[in-house]
Image 1 (cartoon, rainbow, N blue to C red):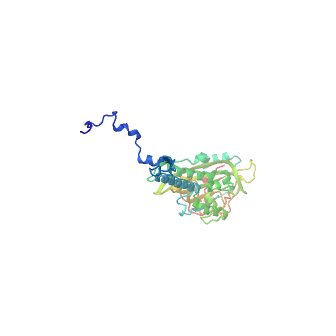
Image 2 (tube, rainbow, N blue to C red):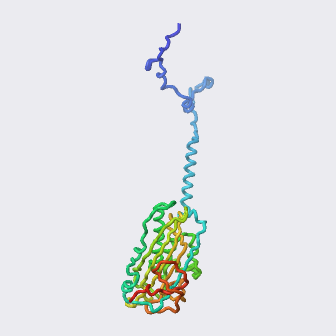
Length: 355
């Protein structure tokens, strides 16, 4: 007769003869292949003094496919990081695209009589239309900001801030005004306009494209100097979206400078120079990111100047007691709104201090 049958529920756990009793001593195929000792066959053990086992050479496993893929990915990522790191950090994705060449217009305004003067510049300011103007950068406030259809609040603020920085540096920096330094203005320009900017100062010309005083305000330091660095300013900034990829900022400001003859002592009579600047800027997304601007147009009215004087390279203002050599077409008031239409104008009497 056969042996005892297995219980219907299977062999109870823990009873001798159960499968679990030998589970800990069962070796799978991979374990056997990896063993360092291997038993000789019966034929191999026939020889005298033959050991029962022999030592197997160690296995040389190659890296798994997954490890190789991981190493490759790490190497590629590392190489990409190095490549990106050695690229120019300010390379623009639109660097190869052309930009509009700015139109630069400078209109001298000639006085009808002698230029008023006073020893104290404050007296001149107090008796002029600039009496209530702010001082310095305070006269270039940022307007209330609202987003456009394709640009966020922060991008509009970036455009307005860059435009303000350009205006402040190009109109209020004493080193720029004295004609000693153009770099503070240059670094704010889109890199695609730098060739025209540099050409304007290397070879200035009154051609509407290479006019230094269209880019910035600078005096002929051999004739005039600032009598007061607290320049009076009033004006506005406005930002609008021109298309889905471009923001435009329009700036309209009047600057009033107190001047004395170059090298004159503090007691010499001072006079006022009024400069009205209407600037139009354009910004693409790279300009916003890099804190740079494209200058599209610059229209400048400045007086008192002589119409026959070269105002393209440096402004040569008439100082206290001087008169213009020749007048222009019609009287022009730089404090009034409106676009200039003449290449030379007459400085309205109301635009000068009553002293």
